[in-house]
Length: 361
Image 1 (cartoon, one colour):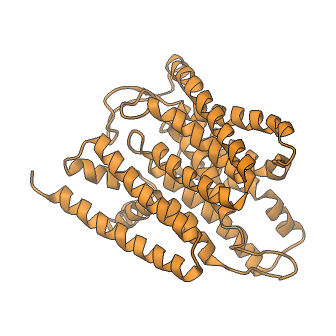
Image 2 (cartoon, helix red, strand yellow):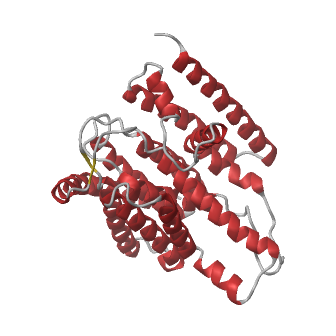
Image 3 (cartoon, rainbow, N blue to C red):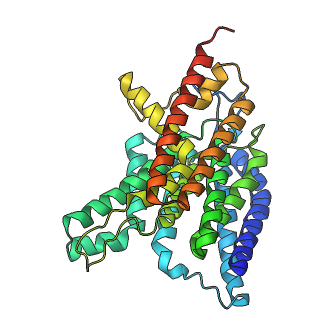
């Protein structure tokens, strides 16, 4: 346990330092190539801002993974077995590339095209499962498992992408969620997932000073989709045992309570995405079109500064992530109780935000 945690912390440190170095280089590159986000419309930033922050995070995590994989020679008891997650790494690269294309050709990559790219990346991760289903065949529950996995990744990738609407918000929430994952995975000695979570924590934390409180660079879709993809993978790995698709059972054993800690750890982005989607449906607007109805926007309209709004939401993210860690060490019944209490808590918080938004000033 001590050696695995030290190993993960070293990976965090490498990715953190690498991000501090790479992100400024990416800022200069973005300005030179004109890969920038311009203010206007519902975009609230006041000046042209580079968009290649996600490239810096991607490079930092890549360097961290290579360095730590090379370090396994010093730790004979540690074997990352990266060959077992080649499809996962490939899927992450595909999501990053799709996001990077969207950043380069800003506002020209349609929703359907971007969604199709996300599906391709997720199918790359699921390649072994899909190959078996299409060549050998499978039971109905096994097909449902594949469909569930696709929805899981799409939901989390887009929820975190939605939350990237204010300086520091999405990257800070990712740092909180990945850090909580490291705490839990450390207790389970799940080294490979813990290292990935530590690398993303370090990379995003190294990016954060360039994005908050004043933004010198944006994470972009490349960064948010890359982080969201590995968030989905790490959290699903936390929920080991939630689904059993072994041939011996001929089906799936659903242990849904195993997903509750992961859902709570990601609680703020998931809740905010669900809230804005419901509001768009109620208002009869397309769910895929961005707007200013997120919790962060409501806080700003209620009189808080953007920095204050982000810090408040970070605080809520910490509360929900802490509840998720508590749920991870609880029996199934208590997990459902914690999930229900968290949902009621967030509904009450939303009512307060909406009341503050409408209050005369």
